[in-house]
Image (cartoon, rainbow, N blue to C red):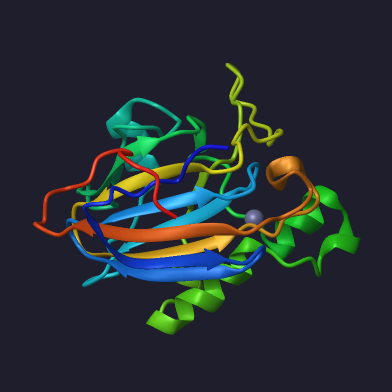
Length: 224
Ligand SMILES: [Zn+2]
């Protein structure tokens, strides 16, 4: 078990358990940190970020990959917007494998990949649409997302496959907001491939900030 410690000196803005298969959202102010905790391990967390003031500016996988020169997200990664600006920096990561390429599951893609009988399985795209609607977002705003804790090896020939996750119970990833952002999460309900170990489980999201406004980095002490 990885200790999901928030520094004792931090002010916790919100701390939410996100049910298996459920959507979640929050506005995160510049200078605040978001920690996403894979409470039970092997749980894909589909995530999108928008500029909280102007949601036409949003996370861009292409710009993030190009800026990093890497297909994967880890500590130090700058999550870029479609306008080439840094939205958040990844400041801590106990897992080490986060996907930028495989996108979100949908009823339509389930049908293609796993057969027509899976068309009515709950999917991430529905979660994004349901949660995004609270902020006036619609289908046109749901862009390719990033997948925390999802293991998607990519072969030299470009072929990618979703395989068993490597995250352990309590693994976490942490980001510092470099602008005010809206975060949408789909705690992936997929049961037809191994991205959730075929058994979706709850996760936890914590937003916190230093009382004096100092940016957060890493883990200091255990605090439940
Ligand atoms: Zn999904």
